[in-house]
Image (cartoon, rainbow, N blue to C red; front, side, top):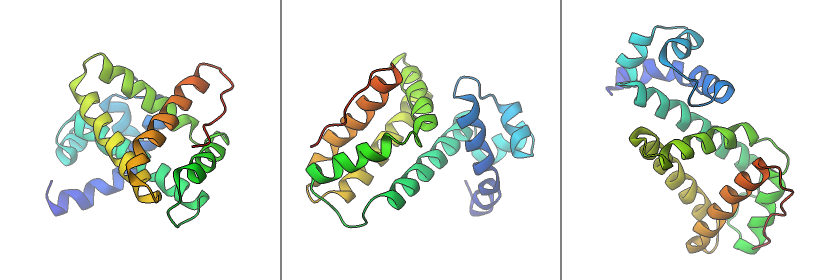
Length: 168
């Protein structure tokens, strides 16, 4: 994407993310997404290159928002895993991330079924979240443990289980 395309596309990213958050991945097709963003499906493809590019931009925006929210709710300084994990658990239990978790689980299910677009996007999102966690830890090598705990907690609570978040 050229710099001009990036600037023009940026005005659509927020409304696209809002649409995916409200409707889910499977029910997010180009025409309704374009309408929600105040443009046409052709313009979305022009700016993002493909439907996959549109979806990737929307999901990256959701992830950016979630990390920004988490940053505001947690101490700025890196912490040991045994301190950060329960803090993340407390934040997760507020339910503020439930809509994003639902979208991520839907994307993950599509990736597991072999959808190449979903695999690419899910991998990018998981890698970015892992890196965000590693930067928040005094022991960055434990980021994968926290990532697994957060994702597992999302799955199990989504199934209706009352799960305590690990203490690290």
